[in-house]
Length: 121
Ligand SMILES: [Zn+2]
Image 1 (tube, rainbow, N blue to C red):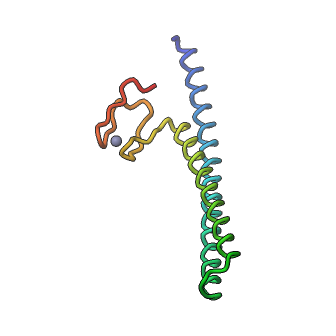
Image 2: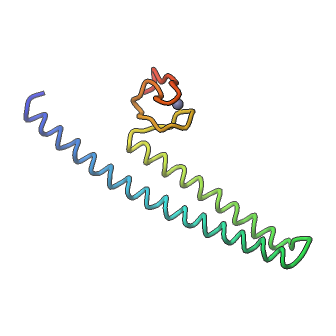
Image 3: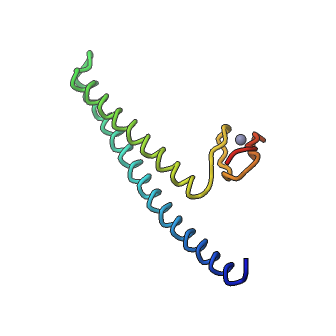
């Protein structure tokens, strides 16, 4: 690679890195927004549980239905958050080891538990 090619490659890499940072910021903002939604639904569940408590045992069926529906929304939001976090990791060229440590996608070993990743693309 000659000097001009190197400079061009450097500029391309820098542009790609800047674009990745924009994407990461966008995904992080979406994660934060969805986490706030999760908290809101958790609060609504709490209110529904309390209203059920006030209404006395057995809990009214309507409250149970409401609680179940809110729980389903939270599960859906958590799946969205997981997918967004995976996209962020891909942009950062990272992966999660079986031990939970975040390592580079190019790593041959986990620096925490020593698991081998030889042959990993
Ligand atoms: Zn590990």
